[in-house]
Image (cartoon, rainbow, N blue to C red; front, side, top):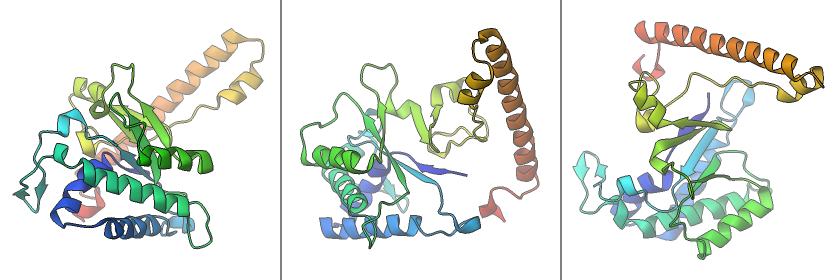
Amino acid sequence: GAQAFSSFDTYMAPYVRKDQLDYPSVKQYIQELIYNLNVPSRWGTQTPFTNLTFDWICPEDLREQVPLIGGVEMPFTYGDLQTEMDMINRAYIEVMMAGDAKGRVFTFPIPTYNITEDFAWHSPNADLLFEMTARYGLPYFQNFINSELKPNMIRSMCCRLQLDLRELLKRGNGLFGSAEQTGSLGVVTINCARLGHLHAGDEVGLLSRLDQLLELGKTSLEIKRKVIQRHMDNGLFPYTKR
């Protein structure tokens, strides 16, 4: 399944500060990451489906938190690391815009950018971001302006899947709900275009069939939940425990 890393620039910035990395070094490491994630290393010679979410500006809930590296508290907070975050964002965009050795666009990781009230619209990095967007149409944007949602409430997964952590809290977190370790059982896609074609002019029939498909999708995910839970109970999942 898809693998997502939220707040990538925020969580990587402490390592840039601690190791005193200059910009060429950061760009080299980002390039290594992107090239490795585009190696067809999965079944059927596929590349891993990966998603990185960039905060761009350190989120409020992390600004006063002290990073831990190797179990040791650092003498700074995440909010002190905007310079390092800018380096990471610039490096990522420049590597993605350059493409591979033949100039072809990288398929993964898919970048998602959080747009908040304090987003730095008039900055060199913002110019690069929208140049990349115009050239390749690469990123997804999560708009948190004029919204009751906060970046710490949402986790972006897969293609269009978003997880609302507030709903997970209501349900007592659960197996797949633990902030940065949040995941999902799976995604069921409803072919709405086909529904419209089959039920043209019959709204009642369309909505009735849609209800049936939604119930079928729910049932398939509940079956999958039981299978995954059984594998976890038997020590087969996660693979890192084996």
